[in-house]
Length: 262
Image (cartoon, rainbow, N blue to C red; front, side, top):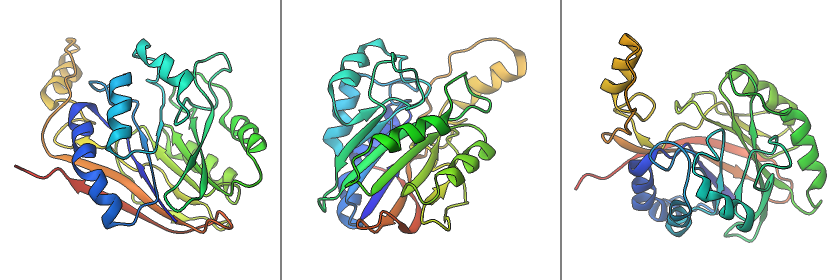
C-alpha cells in the first residue's frame, strides 16, 4: 500500500493547491491513503471547521495538527466529534481532541495515525516518547500500519524519536519547519523516516509568509502582520510504500508538485 503525507498546508494558497492536485495525484500515483498536516491552513495559523471540510472533500483522509491547533476556537467541536483529525498525542488528556485515529485506506488496510510534538525549541509539552508508548499500547493488535507525524523543530529531536520508534511503526515523518529535508530513508527495523516533508503553500516566501513583512520586522523590530504569500505555490509531501501484512516500509520518496498556472 502507498501513503502520502502532505506537509504543513499554509493558508489559502496551500488549500487551493491541495484542491487542484490531490485527486489527480491519488489516481496517477496509486495512493491508498492521504494524511495532511493542516495546523497552518487558516490564514497561516490554525484550522476552521469549513477548512477541515474542504480538505476532506478534496481527498484528504486524515488531518494531523501541531502547536497551532487551538488558534481558532471554533475547531473544538470538530476535534471532539470527528474521527479523522487528531491533536498531538503528548498534549494533556484534558486538551480537546483524540491522541490517535484509525483510518481505512483504499485497499482496505486499517491505518493508525498519531501526531507527536517535539520538545527542543518548542513550547513545554509532555514527553513524546512516553506518549508514543501509550498510544502503541492502546492500538488493536490487528493494526500493523502506523504513521507518526512528528511535529518538531530540531532534527536531533526528530532523529531520536524516529530511532526510538524504529521497528514499532511504519513511518515517522516530520513537519513544522516548512523546509523539506533530503534525509528520507528506511531504518533497519523497517520504519520510513524523514526529518521534514516540507510545506504545501507559497515557496516565494519566508516559510509561507510575505518576504518584505518578515524582513521589515527582523531588521527593524517594528511589528508587522505576517501575511501569507501567494507566489510559487507547491504541494509538498512524502510517499511511503508499506507492506500491509507486516507494517514495514519498503520505499520512501519525496513529492513536490507546482500549482498549475492558468
